[in-house]
Amino acid sequence: MKPLMSLFAGAALVCASAFAADAGTLDQIKARGSLICGSNIGLAGFALPDDQGVWKGLDIDECRALAAAIFNDPNKVKFLPINAKDRPTILASGEIDVLIRNTTWTMSRETGGMFFTGINYYDGQGFMVRKKLGVDSALKLDGASVCIQQGTSTELNLADFFRAHNMKFEPVSFATDDETVKAYDSGRCDAYTTDASGLYAERLKLTAPDDHMVLPEIISKEPLGPSVRKDDVQWFQIVQWTHYALITAEEDGVTKANVDDKLKSDNPEIRRLLGLEGDFGKGLGLTNDWAYRIIKAVGNYGESFDRNLGDGSPIKIKRGLNALWSKGGLQYAPPIR
Image (spheres, rainbow, N blue to C red):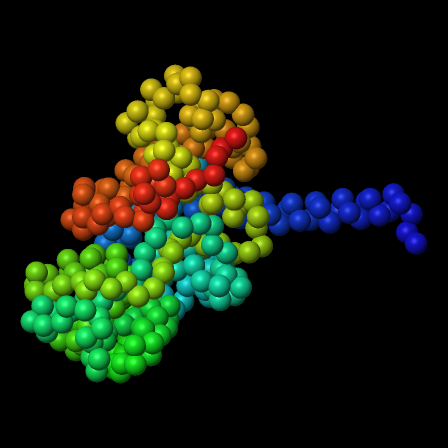
């Protein structure tokens, strides 16, 4: 039997080693001077460069929010566009710090090493067809050819849907979403399937958007969110609470425009959010004004949703399930206290 002090020393060494591993990603980001965020190659509303090459979208805002929390500068982030099939490999390789790329949280992905920190968009898979096809329901697609992207949960959902309804289909698969959309637009397929949010976004790219319609059926649950490697608890929590800060800010009515005025607030919840009370930032390895930095840089979740996907965008998707829990939706943040 080892002496008691030796056991304590060994335990301390294990704890110190675990802490060093947990702090690794944040330290690496600080030493590098920028965050590396895995993003979509291009999906309007989520991640897409504008005419000046500036990346914009709901997912992009969460990447910039992380950079703001760490550096107090939302521009200290580099975006690495990633194909759907390469997501797990690139995340595991350490080539990116975080994957925020409209990726569905599934059991197999998580047990395979992609640790999801939360859900920044509640989605579901749907279908788009040409109006002239005369189809008003996915249940009338028996025998249809369907354009689909490889390496996605969409492929599995499609097969499950047709099997469950005893229908046949012809999958027409492509490596990238851009190739898939172009193939559908050229008439290679009767239908195109992806997440419903993607259908509305991609319809804007079609030669004649008004000639196409999104069918009413939603055939799956697609909880989309950021993911990190499973070996860094501290970094997991930073990514997790960055999203919760965006939600909490909307709940408390704190916006990009009024966040400085809110520094004068007597509301204890707002004061904790903005780092005026408590050491909540320090618990993450950040400064206590981490959430103030986030809101000052990108606003709250509602603002981000509106300008990228909602009424302030060309896509004009309703909040639906992505409304706050207090307004009939599912977006909900644990308390900062």
